[in-house]
Image (cartoon, rainbow, N blue to C red; front, side):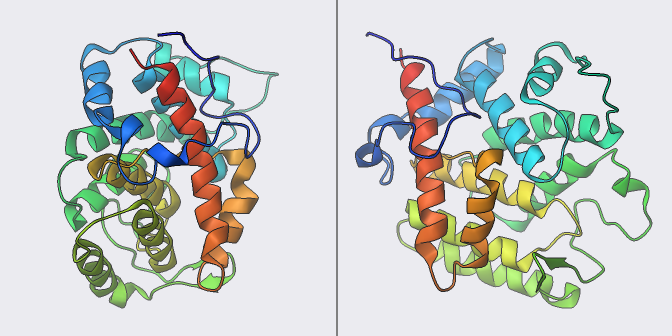
Length: 268
């Protein structure tokens, strides 16, 4: 088939990609066989394919949203060569390097468990993979792969108290799994509620975005990658979800459309 112009997974403005919503939200068309394709490309470490591009796009954007200073090209170079490409003589934080490599491993784990029911073990494993070997891991009070010990806030808002986290996550999972059909809107809703709980001391955003990608694959919905240049829209959507859920839904739909354009590019 004739190929469309290649679409980056981490560049462009909201609305740049064509509106493919008719085949995105409900598990038709593009989503069919997507998990299998990503797994096959992962198994053979195919260079330049959808798996390759997704690893770089998801890692770069998700880490950048959380303050990483690595560029997309540096992220690409680490994935492709396991070396760092210096840029402009800027100092590089060790945690940025460690968390980049960790995110690649976490995405591989995501593909391994994508079709398993989401549970606390998977959620905690995401956190353990993301935060292992970081500066946080050496702190006595910081729990790797376990729920937080200390209260925290996000965007000036209080989150679930540590003693209530386990109960809150169990209730969230029970409500989610009680839905007879999980649609795009349910995955976005879960994401927002998970971030409101903020179950870990740090790394909640990255864990939450990995969960969302996993659940899209699990339920036949084309996934989405929130780009770092849409961070303000994403944060607005999270903070105002209770009163205006369309803010977050529209941000995720736009991201979904961009990922769908890349999936189309890589179709056989």
